Image (cartoon, rainbow, N blue to C red; front, side, top):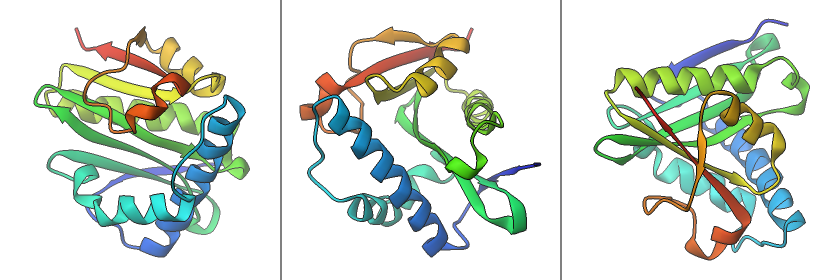
Length: 171
């Protein structure tokens, strides 16, 4: 199956993107619960919050990559947002189960890394729920290294113990 990844400057189908984000947050919250953490909001509320603050993941200071499958169904996403003037934060990497196993997650990471490089950023930051081996494996294979929580992390500080934090420095 061929997938199409696009960087967008606006979200054409907000309901479809909100549905995808709601699925993403449901998965993250489930994984968070498995390691002893808990979210204070519902997945739908988190998805709505992303849409309300969409400018943080759109140009000029961010990037939103959407992946489409059969019949142009939205099957994945990945966001990039500015963490500080020289660094970006990779967020919201998600591939629906129907599209998993096709290296789509890796392709979304590659696209965001290339965008960050083109934006002139020197560093990329990312966090993942502890034990999320699929995601951690992707980042490790690309040369990300484990670090302590970075000050610019956009996730609640009370969840620090339930996440792994990583950094990549462009040479």
